[in-house]
Image (cartoon, rainbow, N blue to C red; front, side, top):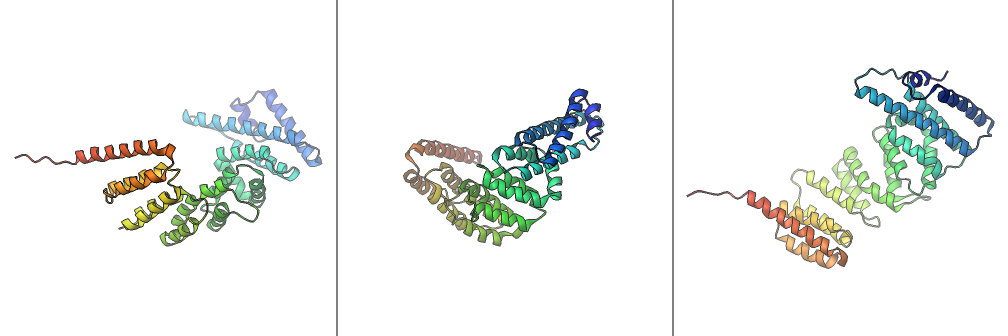
Length: 314
């Protein structure tokens, strides 16, 4: 008897004949795997069946808990997570890592975070190997990077830093511009949390040299600097000047953020210079958006100013 039998039958997850057939398939699949005669299609089909059952069991547990019912889960989630991980590991052993194989695995990891953490702790070496091959095989491996870094964030900071460096700068065998752009600001935030402001400033000066420029890297650094006690206005202005110069042609938002900073915290008179520079910098097709957002910002300023007017009676 498989460990999920009591839960499945108690809560009516599957009909008896359906569950009996699933158990027969499990035995058949395991035998074929042992004899190395199973096809990739057969194994993938069985993995999807196990995933579907796992999702249905999780939903049932959630529904019962929301109704304040006591749930006897019989360790069904752990068992089914084990099943899925074992099947994916066998898939990795028997067949090359391809996108159609990894996609449902990634979906599973994202939807079952606790199960993934539990299994990754037990099979870290195997999954690091699968991760490396998956990064090379997938057209979009961003979910893989997110999953692994999220899991290791507090457990192995030194490994996380290596992953951040590889994600942002690439390796001898791998570089993806979209992944680099996505992880530069994340790397900066991680560095602040684990290493402090001095190391973060040093890292920023390193990351900002990477091409193409990343406007989100600058915005995160600006936010970090503004959280510092008694921050220097000139430091913030310098960052805004750099990001508008590097990214301002295609990005109206960085100009508006710069003007909002001066409007709220610095010198509003500088906004005339900023909007003047913006008009000559942004693409022609973005000028309408620039004027519209600038007008909204001005309206926002005067509305706020009106609320602060103090009327003194004679």
